[in-house]
Image (tube, rainbow, N blue to C red; front, side, top):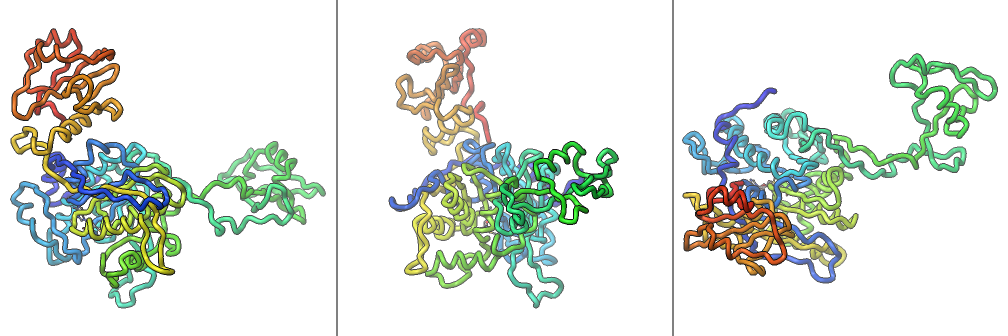
Length: 534
Ligand SMILES: C[S@@+](CC[C@H](N)C(=O)[O-])C[C@H]1O[C@@H](n2cnc3c(N)ncnc32)[C@H](O)[C@@H]1O
């Protein structure tokens, strides 16, 4: 498979492993007013660089996200973005703190963009559920590069399609060469052979179904009767009721003779008035939804850029300018992304959240179909609170005045920042994050199911982290002293009626022999060495 190389690639292919695991700190929570309609409540907005934030999501969400939508910087040369990841390499350090320049003025601009995207896509891939999909909007500045790195990360066989979205409602006659009126959205699935949801049929899809003969089965249209490939055994004459011989089409009929006779009997196949043709009735009642096309050209269906800005002004009418946020997507566009890709209970992630359109679209769709889709948004700029989260607050509680009032959609979310790293640079545990956070992290890393996790104030021992009929997990950790797994400590461990066959015990040291541990089903894990790093 062809792969793309660029300056710095070798420094970033594994960079996601080096990103320190930091704790997400909840700052506040927003609930829509009590009288609001029901909507999803377990939503999150995270203020921080998505490289760190995505890493922090791994313990809880690895393999769980059903739909990722991202709309990263397109690298147009006008966005003023910096490549600032802490990659320790002289070549890359030279780039840091400098705004990425325009084509021709900055020879490494594509290298920087690829270095920025690669580790983030790696983490996004890990977060995707088995049936999950990722949509990435982009324009021609980076589309070709993006396609190649996605082929590498998600697999070229996992490429589903490139959606062409009409982003502009009017052509730009001042353009020197072409008016650019579309964007790309690349779609990859975690598993090969993923199937999209079908879209609801609309009037336009049904317009050619009619019922000229008052058929009790309802509206129908005349379906294709020819075989798609040449088939000798399907090539036969049909005799009409008045004895007319109807010759087969070039490839033969679509069905065997017996099947055609049955359909004639059931009046699913009728004869044309002059009895020179057969007519196969394809009923509307038998039709399923519409398979989505990869050209999204109807601006009434999926909006356009100007219309996205207008949506935002309506929410933030105090700004009175369309420059509140320069590059929003229309909610209709993301609604369609969600409709075709995930279930009503999906977890949806947008790690380049901008003005929060993904959350808005999620809440709208839930309100329409009673779904409980949940969103996680990540935005690194300071407007994460004042625009991203504020939009969601307004959408949840309602906005506008008088006849422009838009009712709230309900729901709630928690707002987080990216906090301290869980490990110190010398690899010891960072006590400053608190024992609860450390225990939670270790519990996730052990894969202890939520219902098996135990709080510190459980009935048996404050070191118990999880318990079920098979296993007890013990985290014997004291910030100020060295802990030792020995017979005295084992003597303190009693679990009432539960008699788990295995005990996984974390401690600083172990004085038990291997034979003893094997005999009693004890697994020792050394702190911090044996704590999984995500
Ligand atoms: C094109 S905008 C997304 C617009 C969004 N789809 C909407 O409808 O509003 C890209 C956003 O990604 C954010 N961003 C860029 N790099 C980021 C990073 N490393 N971590 C988190 N957010 C980032 C930018 O600040 C910007 O708000």
